[in-house]
Length: 109
Image 1 (tube, one colour):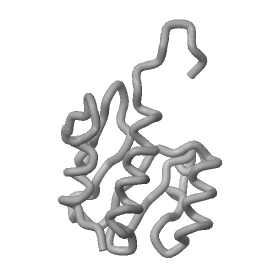
Image 2 (cartoon, helix red, strand yellow):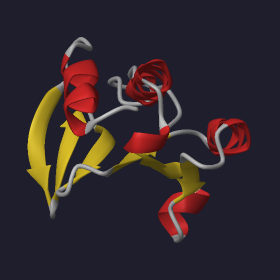
Image 3 (cartoon, one colour):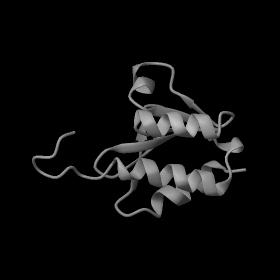
């Protein structure tokens, strides 16, 4: 069972990550936000590609679900932390962190 502190520790261990307030959540970002943690520490929203989102939701349907709006259609995915192992959490954080890296000049978004 993963916790908010597990998420915070995993995210801040990744190169270039900083934590800052974002609306009513804590946001973890490099060049852009890749995961946010709910104020109650029970859920987190991860930035995945739509294909990654489909895989996570299929593999761990009790833990992952698309954010129910346009953000969700872009790949943003909610996770219930208590339904994740620490290993699943670290994997999700790392996957999302890869999408937050600075874009190379001339690269497509």
